[in-house]
Image 1: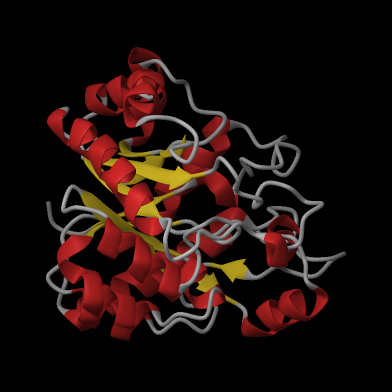
Image 2: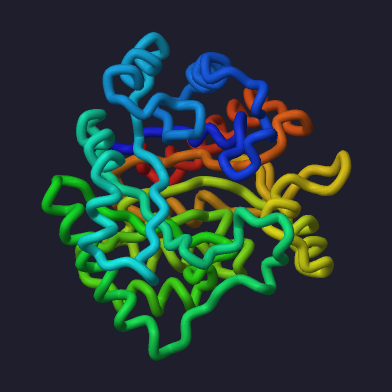
Length: 299
């Protein structure tokens, strides 16, 4: 696979707060995604979860399924039990021709809880990473045996948030565990996504492209906001995240460090669609990605 640009529907409809974008039909999302220039979509809460129905929904727009988030709870479940629970999701991805299995630990995550500030996010001690890495590796081995590559999504409000967390996690996991590099989550957590790309370029199996508004990060940190309050923005103001080219992330540097990456580059910039027109922002993000990918020689 060469580089393909996809989207997560979270710019149209939020998966953690269903009322955000809840009135936007899936057909509108797919129509605008295609108009913006996307080639594929990740799953969202409005997508059918049966392969035949999902193919019928995507086909009129010429869109492929990129993949979709799966919440693991390996801090309290065995890899074998988790794999049984993941069976339907795994079978859907296989039927749709997907190559990656996106996973994130959510058993104690707080990113979906608007009442909890990010300062309360869960943390593992230095002695916990080895056991967790072994558990995740066993689960990833089973996923790999099904023909899919597990890619781990580091995320604000979870146990794998900071650069230090990412290093501890990746060091504890075997080669069947790859990294989903998310530029927005990395930057918000204080890491340099270009440095992470350079460090893990051989183990980065998926890429989420979101930009950040530094002034909003500073405001959210000062006020100790929840993740959802920070991404949605207070009142009429915009939130922390935006599309590539509308914030501070240096995508030219990230893509240069990421070479020779091959796979999906997915715009996943959760915003309130009533404040940030999804189509307008999507077009801006695609244009910036195409320009910086060309600059880095990846397309």
